[in-house]
Structure formats: C-alpha cells, structure tokens
Image (cartoon, rainbow, N blue to C red; front, side, top):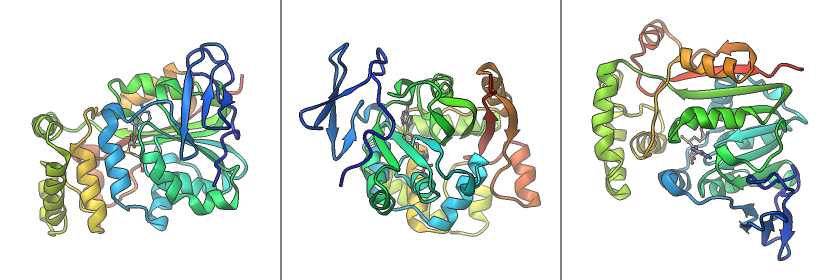
Length: 321
Ligand SMILES: C[S@@+](CC[C@H](N)C(=O)[O-])C[C@H]1O[C@@H](n2cnc3c(N)ncnc32)[C@H](O)[C@@H]1O
C-alpha cells in the first residue's frame, strides 16, 4: 500500500527547499544541502525515536483505541466538531498510535500525522481502512515537531493531545507548531496540568526512579497499578497522591500507567502559562476547554489542581491579516 507522500509538499526542515524523491521513492533528498531522508514502510523518517523511545514501545505494544470513546475525547480536547473537518488540512501533532488520526480521516479531513517515534507504524496499521479508502487522505511522518518539513501556514486545523510536555522545552514545540496554522485556522493544545506542590514533589521523586528503570520492569509495575485502578474508592482517593489509571479497560490502564512513568520529560503547566503562549504567538478568540469528565466532586478537585494527569486545554484562532 502506498501512502500519500505527495499530499502536502515536503520541504527540507533545515533550508526549506522542496524535497525530491530518490532511489525510486526509497528516500527523499534536499537539492540544496543534500540531506537524505530514508523512507521505510512508506513513511519518511526525519528522526529516530531518541529520548521518546518508550512511546515507540508503548504504542506498538498496546491496543487502546476505542472508536466511541476516542471521538468524545477528540471533540472535548480539540473543540473541533468532526463535521467541520471535511476537506480541511489537519495536523495531528504527536499522533502516537493514531487513534485521533483515524477519526479525522474518517470525517473527510486531509491529515498529516506526525510522531517522533516508530509509533507511526502502529498508526499506519490502525488507519489502514481509512487509507485504503482514500490514499490521498493521510500522510504519515516520523519527525520532530520542532523541525517539521512543511511550509508555514499549511493547516486549517492543528491539534496536539498530550504531546508537547514530553519535549525538553514545551514552549519551543508549541511555537514551532503554531507557525503552521493558516490565517483563520484553529490550534488546540492539551498539556498536563500543574498539581499542588506536594503532589508535584511526590511525582518527581517517583519518576526519578521509574524513568531510569528497564522498560520490562516498569511494565510489571504498570500491570500491578492496573489492578489497583479497578478497586473502587482506592482509585478515587489514592490516585490523588500517586498517579495510576482507573480506565475501565485493563490494557488502557497498563498503557496509561506506563505512559506516565516512562518518558524522560514530563512538564506540568498552568492555564495562565498556556494562554500567555497563545497570545504571544498572535492567536485570538482563545477558549479554555473544560475537562471531559464532569460531576461536582471532580470539578471541585479539578479547580483545586488536585487531579493528577488532568490537563490544561486551550483552543485559539490565528487572525486573518
Ligand atoms: C502521550 S502520547 C499521545 C499520543 C496521541 N496524541 C494520543 O493522545 O493518543 C505523546 C506522543 O507524542 C510524541 N512526541 C512527543 N514529543 C514529540 C516531538 N517533539 N515531536 C514529535 N512527536 C513527539 C511521542 O512520541 C508520543 O507518541
């Protein structure tokens, strides 16, 4: 199967020259700097997994996509309705295993799905039906969001769910991706919320240990955490102290727990910080998106920054000049 390599022209991230095909589509090259970008499994590979390696493991190992749930989460965390995506250029910035890429393509959007890791291979697999229906609709890349091979102002809708805080510097990723939004286009970002100081201290102490653990050992711990996540009450109280997932599906709980404790970087942010980044990048019509979960107790704890793993979530629009 061939994927839509040409659907959005690719440029050299270093000097912006148009990339040319090499060796009968086995690679891309820049006519200016002669950099060669290999294509494997139909996907241009601008980078390797690097410090995000645990995500390559996680997304290829666990099956956690659930269509109905993913639709609700997508709409809540982007503020986009699926019926407005038809025919639009959409960027899934940090697609992981492709659960949201798939539903944007199914809604008729032209989506570029980018991840730093081999998680893109899982995304290709998950999106196979959508790609087979229309091979021009999805373009997969293994690339760094800070150096994407696209012209500025290429996308009508850009979203990034749970991604940018895993870079050494979240704001550098935010700014690099912001430049890709067209005038009049929308940009939605979900980042981890900064919790109370005592929670941050416990989490930092734990993650100092878990991020240096061999992945197999951490997976065993994540499986134990997944059992705790099904014990009523415990999962409501204890997870205000230590993060573990209470998702109803066992595999999702293991994946979520591994996802929390494995990555090298995990920065937490405030809503004021994120709003300031949007304003400085020239966006307007800013909307703070509410959490997907509701209920009096949840909202109370959320407003007090007590929910570990909850987010700060904003959508903004680039003004038409
Ligand atoms: C927690 S996962 C979220 C994946 C997807 N958005 C979802 O919610 O299912 C974070 C993903 O972001 C990717 N990522 C983090 N920093 C990145 C960067 N600078 N460039 C590209 N991908 C990045 C990781 O490789 C990982 O797959």
